[in-house]
Length: 338
View 1 (cartoon, rainbow, N blue to C red):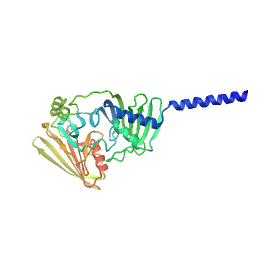
View 2 (tube, one colour; view 1 turned 135 degrees about the vertical axis):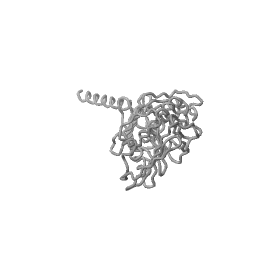
View 3 (cartoon, rainbow, N blue to C red; view 1 turned 30 degrees about the horizontal axis):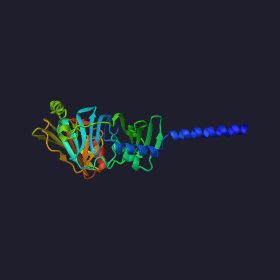
View 4 (cartoon, rainbow, N blue to C red; view 1 turned 90 degrees about the vertical axis):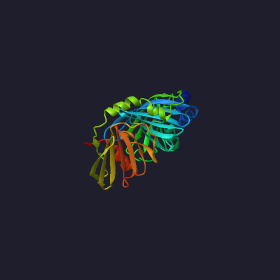
C-alpha cells in the first residue's frame, strides 16, 4: 500500500512538472509568434526613451516611432539637452532622409536603411536580429521573454551584443539594451507605449510636412541664438594634436577649419550661420546614417558630417578608420575654446 501511494505521488509530481513546462512557451514558439505579429500588422506607433552612454556625458532622447507597412518609417528624436537639434529619420517612396527642421537641413541616403544594420528602436530590426542569430540565448521572466543576440552595426564593432525584452502579453518590445564587448549597456531603449492599431494620414511620411511641422517657431528661436560662435574641440583625437586653426568670415556666419596632426591626421570644420537658410533640396550622401550619441550624422568612407546645438560639423581624414571617425565625432562635445 505504501509503495503504491509512493508511486502515485511520484506520478502526480511528474504531471505537475509537465503541466508547468507546457504552460511556458519555448524559444521557437516566441520567435514564430513575433514573426506572425510582424506579418499581420499594418504598422505601429510607439513612444520610447533612449539613454546613450557612448560619449563623455550620458544623453537622453525622447523617441516617437512610426511604421507603416511595408517600408515607411518616421523616427523623431528629441535630445533633452539640445532642443534646437531635434531630428527625424524618414523613409518614404523617395528615399531615406535625416532631417533637422530647426536648421532647414536634410540629408538623403540610399534606400537600404534600416535593413542593413541593427536599430534598437525598430520592432522589425529587433525581430530580424533574433531570427538571424541561431546562437541567441533565451530566458523567461515574470513579464517578458528575453533574448540575447548579436548585433549588426556595420560602422561600429564596439556594440556587438544586445538584450531584447519582449512583453509576454502583447509580444511587443519593452526594453532593449545594446552592450559593448564587456557586456556593459551603452544604449538603453525603454518603450512606454506601443500601438499596433495605428492609422496614418496620406502625408505623414512626406518630406515637406516633416520639414515644416513646428519649424517656424524653432527656426525663430534658433536665429535669436545665432551669432556667438564657440569652437568645440574633440576630447578623443587618436593621438593627434591641433596644429592650425583658421577662422573664415562667411556672408552670413563664420567657419573655423582646424588641422590635427600626429599618429593620424584629420581636419575638423565647424560652421555657424547667423540666419537659418531657406529650405533647399536634400543633400545626397553616399554613405550611411550613424548615431553619434549627441546627434544623428552621415558617414562615408573618409568623413562624417552632422549638426548639433545650431552648428554644422564636418570631420574628414584619410588616416582614421570608420570606427575612429565615429569616436572622434562623438567626442566633439567636450572642451570648448573661443
